[in-house]
Length: 289
Image (tube, rainbow, N blue to C red; front, side):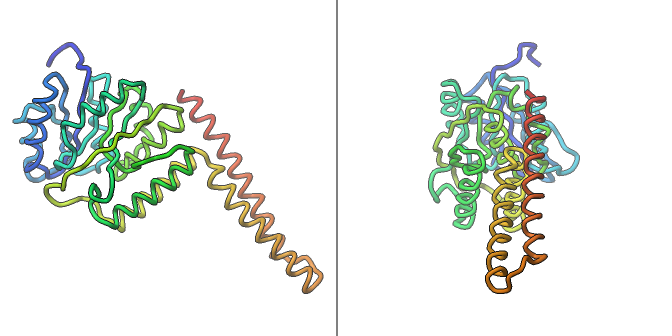
C-alpha cells in the first residue's frame, strides 16, 4: 500500500452488485487514477467482493448484511483521503460526475450533494413524490433549501464527515442524517444537479417500510437538530385546542372543565420538554465541536 495518503477516497457500498460494479470501478480508475477506491461488500452472495478486488479496489467485507449506512460508515472509517466521495454501485451514478462534485466542493463547500433533477432521475413516481415531501419537511426543519435529502452521491471533507458517523443509522437512510447534521453544525452544503441512470439489478429499498423509516429518521434528526421546531407546534396545538374548548364550555355551560385543564397542562409540558431538548442539543453539538 502506498505510504502517502491519497487526496481522494471513493467509498462504494455494495450488496449483490457484481454485474454493474466492475464497470463503475473501471471508469473511476480511468478518470481518477490516483484515487483510493474502497468497496464495502455488505454480505453479498454473488461474488461482489471478489469482483471489486479483481478490479483493483480496496475491499472491506461484512460477513453478513449490516445495512447501507453501516457499509458507508465502514468505508469512511477505512478511507485515507482528505476528501471522500460516496456513490452507489448499481450504475446509477455517473463516474464522470465525481469531478464535477469535487470542482464545486473546492469552491468552499464542506459537502456537495448530487441532486437528482426531475422525475426522470427518480426510481418511480411514488419515490419522486415521497422525496419531494422529505425535501420540503427537512428544508423547514433546517431553515435551508434541501434539493435532494436522500441522494447517496456526495463529496465531503473526510474529517468533518467522520464527526457524525455515530449519528448515522445502519440502514436507510444515512444521507438524510449526514445532510441535516452538516447543516446543524453550520457547515456549508451545496447541491449539484445530476442525471442518474436506470439502476442495474433489483433495488434493495422497500417503498412502504423504508418510507416510514425515512420519515422517522427525519423526525429523529429534527429532535437533534432543532427540537423546538417539533415540540413548539405540538404545544401550540394543545394550547389553542384547550383555550378554544374553554371558550366553548364557558359560553355554553359557564364552567372550566377538566378537559380544558388537561389540554393546557399538556401544552405546557410539551413546551418544557422541547425546551430541555433544545438545551441538550446545544450542549451535544458544543461538546462535539
